[in-house]
Image (cartoon, rainbow, N blue to C red):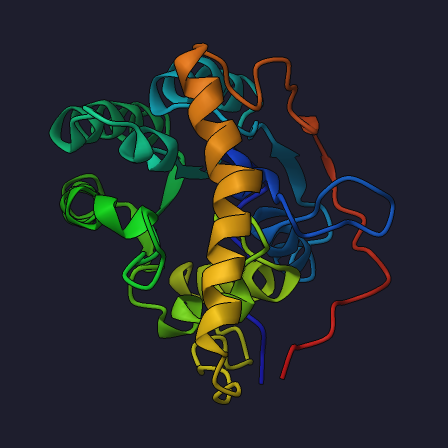
Length: 267
């Protein structure tokens, strides 16, 4: 079967830790992530593709739109992924309607410059203790994302609809970031959203895992609160973020060099 030509010459990824690729270790060190994996897949269709990743962990949506969008435009991006707002939604008092207004303004700016835009909804936290308290707010923001895409002619990766992501085995121990397998599947889903058949099943759920002992589950939840929730709350109280001193891992658009190894499917 013929592979369709790639219409883009420069892909720039923007966002926070999700797009930075946290908890998906790269063979050369640091993190890889779904956006890097997507760039690899796109480069297979156009070896001349240039790619930059401006995402920085901890970034809030205003930081992404104010700092990263102008950078993407200056790099000459004709395809951008703009995924942000998740950190904002987690914060008490945040307004999903105001976030949506800011997101749409950024998408409109990118579209006016001639770039195709790929957005993503948040994953459904229905099975995530504590995080599921933000489910209603996340759902409102996700609804806005679909409406923004329709109005602005953008594309959407539907993470909320990926039932496989409701499996705890797709998530790292912090329960916030995906494993390598989760990032791999999101990259394939993104490739489909862009109109290029992924050729692999990214949507299938994992086989059922053995039932966990309730005492073990309670112990794991308590450890998670100590190791991750407590420090997160502490940073919020101090007005700090995990990415305060962070820098984009790939600030310049350059040709893609795919890694030589792939993760093993947890099944």
